Length: 199
Image (tube, rainbow, N blue to C red; front, side, top):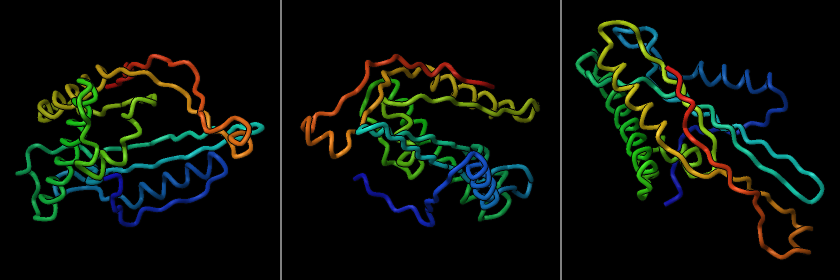
């Protein structure tokens, strides 16, 4: 099903880059952060969808910019000191695992399980074959983080292998549809590669 309940999801109008910056700061302030062992650890994902519309004559163009900050994975769940932290670590790892399954399915051109988690459901447009995506991975230089660093780089490598065609959807207004029927137009396909991986 395409329907999924997302509690406390909000939608706000913005009119400038400053408005977007303020919204990002407010979103970051509401995130769950820090654990008993790492005060800088992020214990939540943040997804902000900036929707932009422009009109020229009878033609309307819509675009979405997804700004996504994923929580860090925690494969060693023994580091979770409290029951709450353990439960959060399990949820985070499950959602990241679901995201990994989506990436693998897209890479192999297999049926994509977007509905396996709320995270992948939110990000389905980023992997739907009509987008440009850049991933920045954050790793630690510490010796005690070698395993997590290797897993993160392996994840980024899988993303980099994805490629598909991206094209522009042109949305006709009601007036143009009346004169042209209901056929929609698109520009020529442009090859897109996930080659923007920064460690």
